[in-house]
Length: 465
Image (cartoon, helix red, strand yellow):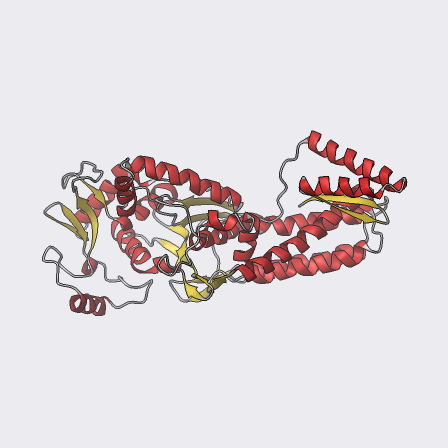
């Protein structure tokens, strides 16, 4: 398995730190509003990466945090005349609702910044002791000059950064270097605060992820991931803090997803093209949003438009219809041995799928492999396959789709199924008696229940839309 490592700017063979295990940290959202389509991409992409590692037999510890203290959260709380805890708690719950809708598996842990203050203060103290940080009037800064490798992820030169910053902004007398960044900031009226050796205040953004990654995964982790907008300064600063504090490499592989544009323009509230996942889900089901994200390679830009969403909806329906047809044959096809030639053929689609995913998690080509399986299955179904053959095709279908988080079955009530079967039987009886008005009315009733029926030579097939 090869993955593109932002740190080295090349594809590398994945070799875990510990055989059979993967330690993975993904930057989560700042919880002051609903997640937007841009937030959804890392959610879906890295959930799929995790699923593929698990498919390959790895034991994955997956950490995704919530930033629950931030200027935006404080401002939102002040606007609503409530507390930061109320705002962050509300949107963490809403975030979980959207993640569940997108079929994103819960992380092994979802740490929150406000629960990690003691550990944040402890790491800042270590950085000061190591000569990598300094305090000035209640503010603690990281000294970028104290970390010679600063810039190794973003490939930015520190001296050029310092010169550029000096030209753009007035020099902060409290800082040793213009590129130094805040680890701890002093309390301001109207803001939350915690007691520290440097007075009351709260942490800077970057230190939080360094601490949570260390706390739940250790000093060195296999994979750190997030959107490409986090490469600099957030992830660059995480590396500096973590390696200066722990004296060990921070992350072996760095994965970054590309941006999502809207109708080929950068997403912006001022342009009126800013969409939350919740808003999109009112027009397109969550499963279509997930499928849309997986139809592009995660590192490449992805353009969101209603036409593309509709195309993805149609494509997903094609896959679902094929799987539903298989479901009918599982119940109604004749007995018999599985066709060895069919088994050999469908194994090729699995190999095609794995080849795509092994090449830097190329979900777009993995989806193509599933489409090829659909095409082949639709041909074989017309040849009156045996139940055993249908079972083997269905197993392959479900295996590959589950890696991408698609078509995973939801529990259905037995009484609901019984009612559907009863209505289908009544419709069959009405058609037999040439009472086509009643038959059509029953079809409409089933459609209103979200049930699609298909008349075939083998009988009536039905599935949930």
